[in-house]
Image (cartoon, rainbow, N blue to C red; front, side, top):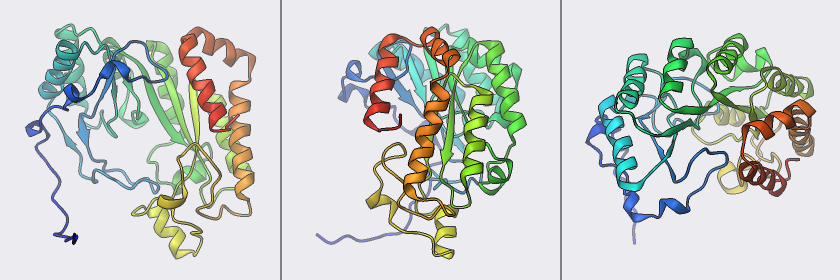
Length: 310
């Protein structure tokens, strides 16, 4: 069989024209997630694309942001509830709140139609697209958990990765989440090529400062078609192909690129240090027991042991 490349396909702009997922093909009752409030649970993507310029992102759905209409999103939520008994939905958009009016309208429709649903923004919401008014509405619509992704705790590194906002904004939104009662999941990255022990420790300290209920410290992976990958090629610092040599963000050491004078084993130990310092605080352990179910804590603990991150 011969493969023929016919060129790049254009992005689909009218997402409302697409059918809903074929959930009838799978048994959703077998799916699980740690953490969660209700089962059965499922997932949704209400928009595609991201116009921002983070150097580690491959923009797998393009840079042009293409949203589904609020009505279409509400219709799928109603369909998932009525057809499959879904009680919790994990929303995986890169930029759910990029258009403020659309985000508010989705929440309004969920509230008006009295959908009995729990919501997680599992892929996070950008801190610079949020304020107290929108967070209150998101909470009222059923949201109990959302991700915040400052990625790093050092101001200079944050500029270099082109995150697009500063730590002050992250602190502000974290405090507002506390006010409205939304649990937060902090996302951090360790192992950019221009990092050192000090900048990594800044990330660990910042994570403790904002004190999300749960956090991830993920190793940096320079995927192809990212600015980070091109930078490593230009500097002759790419050591291995990420696609064929990397298991996941969570497992193993960084073997794909040089990180200053640090060894891959140094980065692995710093990630372990980050998790230990974060979770092995008496106050944090009490916080976890109050916030999550025993089953969720057990699942998260077993995963941490399997990936050797503790």
